[in-house]
Length: 181
Image (cartoon, rainbow, N blue to C red; front, side, top):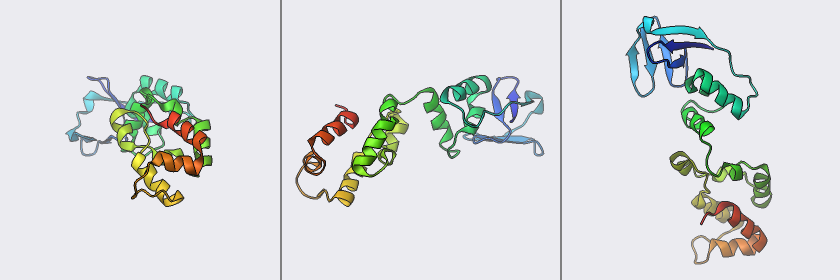
């Protein structure tokens, strides 16, 4: 990967990254959030660094980010450019309850019971703001109404409906896994 190292700040940026672009013909560079800046070539040293291997582990990604900088490492994350900084943050700071939500056994159980991927019900706002996975209960309620006939416009608890539809044992497991009191 072709990168540029700022001699003053020691910040390394990829030539064409999700947060920046260098344009040597016009003597300027772009950084998201700052806009186009004047490029002082003597402040930037061009360097070629190795690419991260294709089937990297989380630890290999973190080691690469420590060695070459997060701006370079996030170029290898499999997501859109706007999500890469958030995903990179979570690589160093995993959500508190990540082991529950990314557990294959829990995901398989959920899919078997509800016939839907668990990731469909992640509350993205809470994940972004609090770095914590949470069930989007309103989305789940709409799903129960549409797929299983939950009467959301009538009086009656979701818990009672789920017990009658899926059984008490299933509902108890659901509450143990997803509902934090």
